[in-house]
Image (spheres, rainbow, N blue to C red):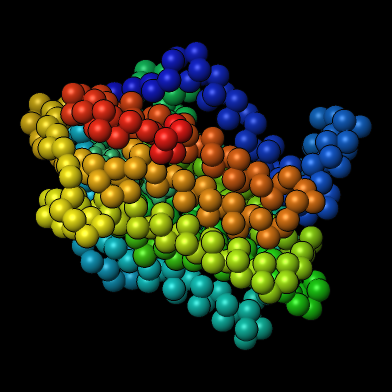
Length: 434
Ligand code: NDP
């Protein structure tokens, strides 16, 4: 059984775990309340809480309702059915520290297309009005908050009594196990991969579904869709389309190949992604901004460019690994480090580290266009309120922390070869600065 290792010091780990476990659920509700009922003003929400205290928070916290439950269950079952039934190429994930290699069916792009076509058709033909989702958003988030906590308990119990593979284990501490998870690749049966469902088909898919929902709701409310909303929706949809286009690549990333299925990843994808990642669009529904054609186009083009560069960084790394370094990077033979490492089962393996192209600029340069893209789909809200920028600020913190976690993990994995990479590419994220 593999053991869970703490990346930060135990004190910092426990403090951040307990803080996130207790503050993220009310935060989701306050984000919804501020955008939908407080004109996007944090000050209004703050004053309300100051006057009414904890009881005020309890008063605005919507109760989980039957309609919210039905909407979530229909959506989840639909996505689970698409994940299981749609055809797709057989794809192998990266080999795990215990030598296990997960196998997937790559049908994300098909599921994404079917989901959006179905959702928009239901609206177009008058069968289901997506504005209902917006009108019950608070109840939906509340139901998701509690439902996903129960789901994380299920993951915790499953990790103890029925792990799906050898990539599972306990740290010996119940909070750590619940927070970071027990299993790396939990499955129901042989084929239903739980992390593909929570991270991709529920979480990332909900981002696109809610982006469309916000657009339709604004249209219903004002009889038109503002240019700011259009730029925001197009950029978020292009970003999510890019994600599903590259979904099999995502299965090689930290979220899937290193972070176990627990509160951090699964609750995050089931609740935090639909509520916080979509928040700039949620804000714009009731606070439309008219940018004018020229400004709207500038923002759109800048956002598209950032999404493309972020995609190209991921593509470059994967192409390099897939071809074993026998590819060109920016028109040249790539420079690389041949790194050896030992798996926990004692096997010696070799891996290649790319040291040119985007990966020669900084060790995590791909986070720069990721953050800028988020800025460009938030900036259509202009600068009346801070709340549309919350996601960008959160993303900066998340990715700077992630870069450190990844560097520490790679240092432990590759030892002197990682040191060599750090000497060749000294900056962690921003070339010349950090
Ligand atoms: P990746 O997992 O894709 O990349 C890091 C891994 O790549 C390392 O763990 C290492 O794994 C390998 N690696 C590191 N350096 C090199 C190198 N020079 N050459 C070859 N391989 C290398 O990173 P992320 O999961 O963080 O990001 C993937 C995508 O997801 C990005 O586009 C990112 O912007 C996006 N993202 C978005 C988030 C959001 O919330 N919006 C959050 C996180 C990521 P190995 O063990 O295989 O060597």
